[in-house]
Length: 239
Image (cartoon, rainbow, N blue to C red):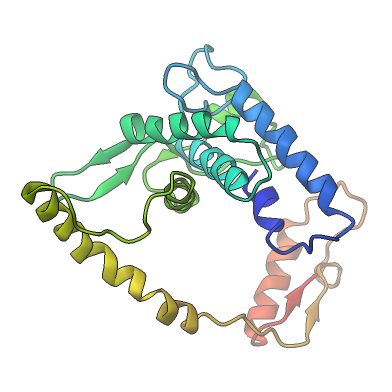
């Protein structure tokens, strides 16, 4: 879902593949809303098995779905009917999955550490439930922050805090401004430090390290050897 709305940032308006991506965004988000838990506003680890024993409300996908819908509305890819489910999902994360520790640190809970298919991962219900559940997994924390930014824009809220109102409110806002404004002011400086990686014009074919081409054999060892050789050579591309 995130990949769909993000790739549109890089496709020109006249790109022949753009209509198909837009159609997929709308199709995916329609399914996302259909499987949103009505009580919590969140999404289960196995989306369409909400009432099944062992299933749990999962943070990383919930954050990604909220981000996708909010950004989709902001960019005009989705109608504003998606505002309500996006807000409900975000509130669900705040109410049920965010925990403030004694030291003030904020923790995002109930993150599935990893999941995939192949090499013993059979895609069964039992498989998805036995993957580790961790806190503050980056594929959840990142989308949660991005979702907040998109919702801030969606609701027309200022991206920096300004003081106003009664004395108590002004004091609270001033405190927030002191902690928020400097970080936003640093954005150009941070972006200036980011440089696209440059890879040497070397290729390391996994077939040269023993990978089979039958689509059946386990090529993990060959891939590992190709990566190690690439690293020892100072970089390149493993293909």
